[in-house]
Length: 220
Image 1 (cartoon, rainbow, N blue to C red):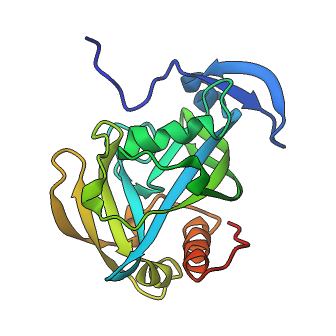
Image 2 (tube, rainbow, N blue to C red):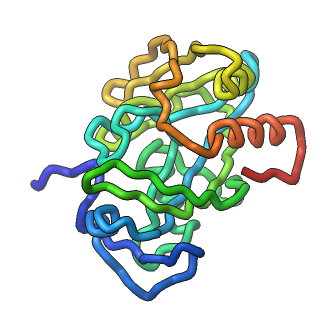
């Protein structure tokens, strides 16, 4: 049996233009990233609240990922394959996290336009459809895929907000390794996060806080 990879370089993507419109062109994942073509993806952010307070769940990316391996990111994310809608791409939640939420529980909070470059041959230009998912369950209820996900990390939401706004230099979280689901404490520093130029982590955190506070009109 062929080894399963963290990403398939031959997966087909629909190419869009810089304004998000379809071009009618379909290309291999590896070629899209080599050529810097615009394409679509989803990000699903998981937040919740229990007896210990409000929290946010993050993913530590698999070490074999083709971009930012080992960095902290949205807990579930993935590209739209050719012909897929964002709703079709909800499969990423089950594939990466081992949970199957009701699609109606996912709250679309905006489209993020981002360009990420890792020269000499990786240029990732995306329209990311961003969703929030409230899930109050502990980390032990997840079954992350160790090929795609190195670990899941849970952080106190209000501490995270202070951290991503630069008010603190570190934050204490809880890590669950995907390989054996062992739980350990984790101290997070800024260089462990994927670099973002648009205060994305802060905007997501504020949206999660507002959702927990009962606000209905959320945007990232």
